[in-house]
Image (tube, rainbow over all chains, first blue to last red; front, side, top):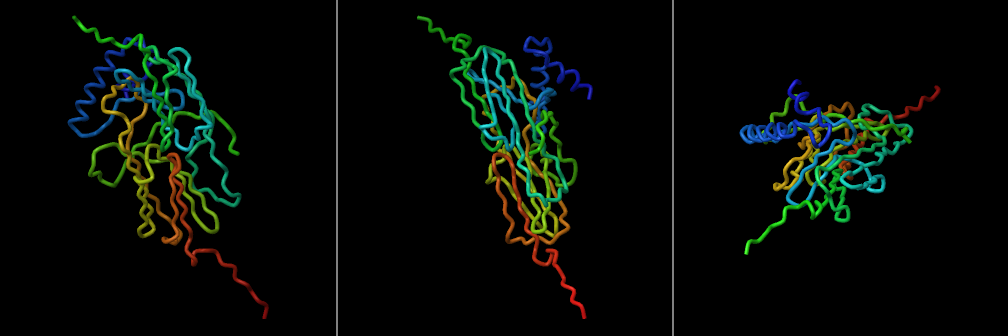
Length: 153
Length: 134
């Protein structure tokens, strides 16, 4: 689809000239979705497994990935500066020898991905959990970059 | 052990047909493995984001329906930075050729993977017939 190529693919970095446009497009999507009652968001096409959703609020970044069947022990997370790397392996245990397969769609394998977060983070203030196959990493934004409330006397 | 290759990103497949939706939201087809032994049929389905309480399994007239509801797991206060996958429910139907012993169906959901064991009913089990000479 042309629109996807225009807005989805060129995610080359955070200094993306299309970022502002992307934001507007997303905003419009939200409005149309609110109207039609569908929570569909325009996707940036991921190139590397796993696909990530990154959101933020005032003081945290939330990085989420769908990793069904991946065990916490098989995951390795690292934060270096603004960059977060997620590596691991999805293992599928072999079943009994006389199992005859009708469908085999699930895949096992290794993965490794790094993303650069848009702002500075406080690597010591990090939380990661894996619940129902969803990995959620919460990283606090560095206090230096957080807006400070200034009280006027 | 399955050989260890690099995992590729696969786009989640939206359910295309049937089952008119009464609720809003996307519905995806979960990826499954299905295998059969002499005693049972086992189905494994990837349903990330579904908690054990939200899975429903139905077997009527040889049609197996699995569906999983997903509660939104993102906070309302959060704004998007990067979105690469959509969140939605799961739904898939299968027609089973064997007769299943409905009382003995086992299902468990572990870390987003549903494992469903459908034991074949006694009469569907292959039976050895002894031929006697005479």
